Length: 197
Image (cartoon, one colour):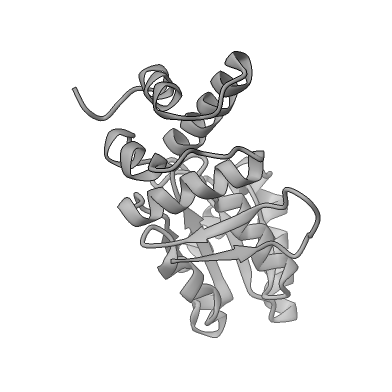
């Protein structure tokens, strides 16, 4: 398990937790020469770090990244793809959730059909624990001892669920003016939906 600090520093700077769900994506970023037409499309569930990975890819000088590419005008996207080809620049497109992006422009569809497809999966227990710790650190939230062993088996296995859980713990802790310990973890889990009966 590792973390990537984004090039933008400062207090509360975002970090990308690298684990089972996205390590293949990060590895692929290191070998853009192997991408067909130097183009890759990154898919993944909401809040799984696609935009952060795209930002890191671009700011670390690996190539150009287009976040939320599906929302871009297809003719403009086609021109940007052509410009990247002319310059020999690796191009990373963020495509949202797998299967939801339908390209209508035939020339663009044929080019993107050949692109490398990368996907962020569901985090395992180790990555869930790291995500909880990273979100808590970003919010300046001190979790009590034993938080991750208690929370990990009980929370939904998704990036979005972890973000919501840490937000709920932080909010409840502030509202009650109490440290984030078992009673608050339990109530936050009830609020966001526990994985256990």
